[in-house]
Length: 180
Image (cartoon, rainbow, N blue to C red; front, side, top):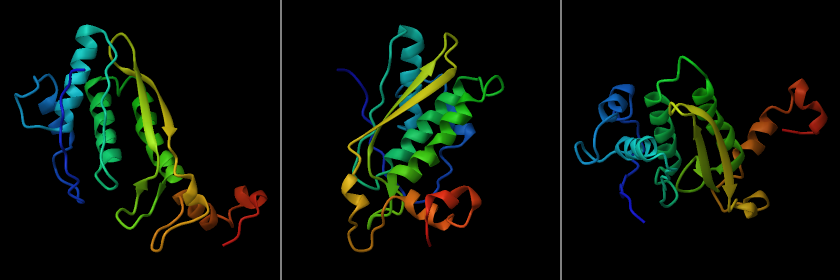
């Protein structure tokens, strides 16, 4: 095993350190030349993938509310941007756009986080020979099944249940027999 460890703290507010300009600042840099950042980790994985032509993994770990899902989104945004293929394909957009759908199905309100992921995710991103994203596969594991039938005080079930009930009056949901 060899790798880099980045400790990130969720500031619970948007900071101006994840924009396109910051992505371009980290792109092409060597690890350690700039401040520690999720983009530095993503750049190192991207460079090693291109240089060694070997699969790379980034493990994002932490407790509830630590910002794991957001960090994974930032890494995917980095790959989509540095791949330079945004004008050629919309795969990157589709990969990034699938996250809210996954969040609706697997995220819930907890006492520590209004949008807490209640499952583990393994996201596999495929690249072509020019290192542009060509697809992605997301697998979930350890889904918190008990949440379907029981929630602690001040917590909610998965978002999708509330979204479906809020949409019960729409014609496309008529056959589901939903009520408010």
